[in-house]
Image 1: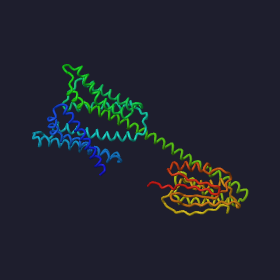
Image 2: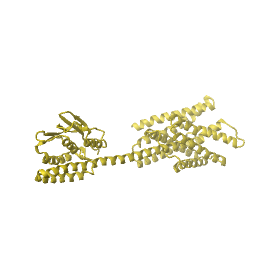
Image 3: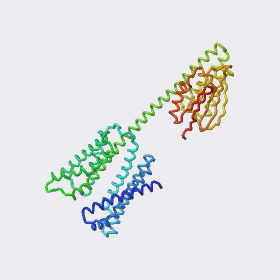
Length: 466
């Protein structure tokens, strides 16, 4: 319904503006009474022509905005055919029934108006598309390649299409006019290039001047050149205005297509830059993950070496538990996150490993509200506990108690402090690594509170999109 109301409002204002300008133009050519009579004769038709074409274009554009390409192409094709058909049929009935003219169903008048309706539809749709592309482009100084085969393809196809359409509807072209159209088209391409690809010129005012130059100034210059080169042809305002009406759409659509291509290139470059950034981010994230395994292994091999000298039996149990844990770590290396419940099961194994080393000097208390939807970065909880062990004195005289609980959408790990030094835990390598890994997964931040007696860290619980 919101698309309908938006299209209705745009089409009404568009049709009202065009017809209002048309009425003003007519009053400059004839007296006011005659202008009103002329408008009454064609006003209803022109209002419906502009309203219907604009309404279908706006409705289709917003309806297809978030849809797949195949859906867009199908819908646009259907509405274009609908625009042409409605205009053609309306024109036929207008001539044959309301104006009582004996004409066949297939005739050029209805065909011409149907094509005009298509041009209006395309203009409105491309205008909305271009507006969105400019809005999406967040940089004014993107460097993109302009002079390539695509640009010249747009210019050549636009020129050939225009010449064919004018010839089809009875227009006459001599060699001078053909050459002039080609040269004027190239000039339009150059004006557009200078406006779009020069950072100093690319402003809203410059863009407006670009369109006015291409649609009004260049056709006017072309007309003056024709009056100088064609015999028995003098300057005439009526002929100049008719020339604008005939050749104006060519320059308008040529400029519009070039503008859209420019926006498309910027959008493409931004997507490529984003893709490269994502690849770089993935590599960096993997490098951070890869720092965990050697660090974990080095710490525990050092412990194992000490246990072999102190208690060989305990060393055997420790090595068996370490092997099981490290096998689990290797399996999780391919994953960025792990379910909270699964990670807590692994932590129980890790706690057993720490018990071999510290016995009753380290204690754990857990109070967790389980939920299948919560995840943690791989090895996050293990990193926090390892950080506690690394930076505290742990003995029977100075025991450490680690508490693991949930609070809102956080996993809270706290412990009493028997610090080996006065450094802040936040500055330690393990926590720094974990903070950076979190930054690739969520905007939520790790929260750390450190006093002389307690260290408390809150890890955001991740909820993965389904």
